[in-house]
Amino acid sequence: MDYDTYGSSAIELAIELANTERTDPGWARAFLSSHVEWFTPGTSFDLSPGEAHKAGATAELVRAVALADTQHDVLERLNQLLTLARPRPYATDHDGELHLHYARPDAPVLEQLTTTVAMGLSQVVVQHGWQRLGVCSAEGCDDVYVDTSRNASRRYCSNTCASRSTVAAYRARQKG
Ligand SMILES: [Zn+2]
Ligand SMILES: [Zn+2]
Image 1 (cartoon, rainbow, N blue to C red):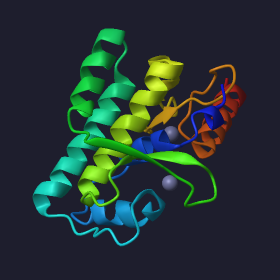
Image 2 (cartoon, rainbow, N blue to C red):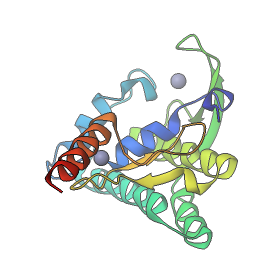
Image 3 (cartoon, rainbow, N blue to C red):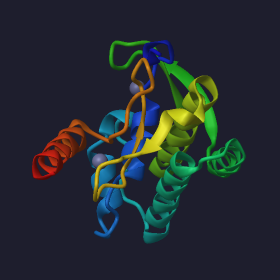
Image 4 (spheres, helix red, strand yellow):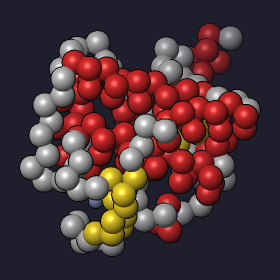
């Protein structure tokens, strides 16, 4: 599988949103500020508490899609997420690569975020299958991931979790 054919990594934004800690009230602004490349330059990142709550609900829905283990549940949750999207796609080469943006450029940041995340996630699910989404197998980690490996063999959210688990398994064997 090659996501280059898809031409965008919007699903990575969705996954990162789902895995973001949301205990700090400023989490949404911090998240947006560390993903500026996804938003039209000049877009305000000031979210009302209500908007931050909606961004959190979007994050929860992405996670729910990744955790679903039947196609029926995937469809239900994905469509719930898509009702929040306001797609108005346009093509751009602002970073040198021709690709699509899903939300109108002058939309408020919450609309840009929700639309990009919903469209990016749905594209991958319908093109590559919902089985490509999963939850990390490392002990103590429940982050979700999208599996872009050729043979769909991914089990961990990150290299950190993968090597931590390898070390733990090695130690367990040594003990035994
Ligand atoms: Zn772009
Ligand atoms: Zn992990």
